[in-house]
Image (cartoon, rainbow, N blue to C red; front, side, top):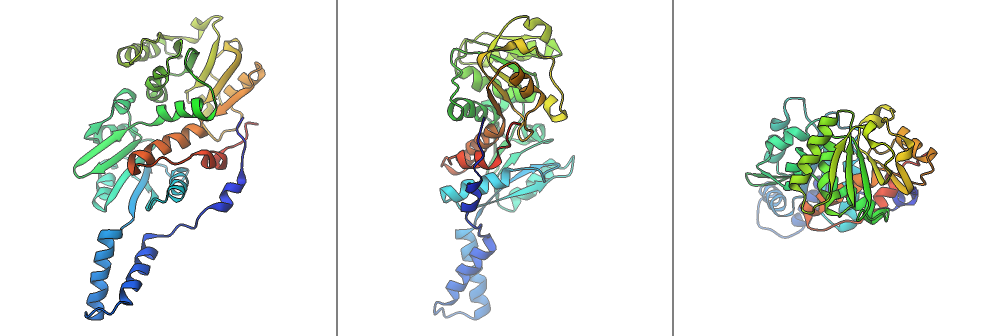
Length: 330
């Protein structure tokens, strides 16, 4: 179970806005003995500093968007890495994703994270899709370079990094069960398979959907990990070392129809949703004797760190952000 360290918040640096930074620079320019009329000197100073010292702008786009933690996360990353960026929230009207992104790019925006309900819109908007986005069929990060819109999906690599690096649970040689066959599972499959587990089983209420996703994974994985898609009744007495809940059940406080016998001794039970406390899935695992419980807060931080590194070329440490956002699993 993750621990919460509220001390991190007391060490935050006060953000400095672009306008404050520009004003300071222009004031410095005015102190120089320049032989220009005051008004013209101010205009030229503003143009010069805006062109050469402008803060890079990034944002998260969604609808709704107020709940997003991305500005908090990326602002923290910028502070600890010394990167000069501003990161905001963009509320896009439904049906106007492309127009909203066009406006952001026209204003100099460098990149965006994408949240619900626009991940499919971003997939269609991109000019260059990474394999991660192609496999997921959805995009959660975009980078703008001229006319090019590069697109990635970092959810899967973020999940794997949290499990392997933060939680100390290697997936190699483990039997892995994934609940659900939707977009979250599609995005996670290839990074999980790349770790070399002994087997991956996808279980879903609609068996055909799980089977189709398993077939897709078999075609695209780099290794030869056995992957199968089944219904809940087909699990029988099988037990698993790692169980991921990638269904939307926890968002409505519902429990997937999973037997408590599916958890092997020493199992990790991982809820991809975050900030919900002890969800019905995690409660089921706990009642079955599972002591290694985690939610998706680490996945959230790690996928954000992947995007930040992709944009800025430097990878931030995520520990402080995870501590700040962790909700006790009670």
